[in-house]
Amino acid sequence: ETGVTQSPTHLIKTRGQQVTLRCSSQSGHNTVSWYQQALGQGPQFIFQYYREEENGRGNFPPRFSGLQFPNYSSELNVNALELDDSALYLCASSLASGAGELFFGEGSRLTVL
Amino acid sequence: GNSVTQMEGPVTLSEEAFLTINCTYTATGYPSLFWYVQYPGEGLQLLLKATKADDKGSNKGFEATYRKETTSFHLEKGSVQVSDSAVYFCALSGRNFNKFYFGSGTKLNVKP
Image (cartoon, rainbow over the protein chains, first blue to last red):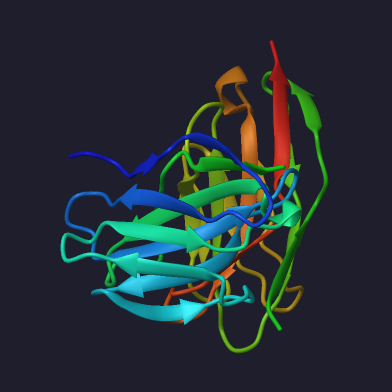
């Protein structure tokens, strides 16, 4: 059973650019959530996808968008990058019936210069 | 709104010492409460959870009791080991588990 994998692990962008982060969910998991973790802070909820539909969104602007594919993998897209977008982006997969257990990847570290 | 506050770290203990990491929450409705742990170089993983008032979650010698009257979910362990060194996150979620609110994390260092 493979765990949650994210790519890339590290990347550097400049202000105004766009970025796409990818996540492969754990085998059999139909739900993917994305979190942003700033340095020294806890993860903040961006959004969740269930069966390719957005199933909840946190307080993030529309330039943060996502997709979930039929194989339950997911992408996080961020447009018009700002310096404050520098953070660790975490993907977590789960079962809709999993009573709250999230399985996290190791994250993608984004630096915006 | 929903939020979680946990004690700031780092917490440094000697092996076999007693551990308490405080966590309090603010929530609407009846949240479920969780402790997640992040070991060095790894992703966050669930340590324990409690889904209703007075429930006690336990795992790997760690315990936490859901106290609705004090809105708390403090993490305890009677005797820590060096291998417990990690960052611990308290979190809450609503009934449908589609959105988690995490505290800022507490780093635990256990010295031999």
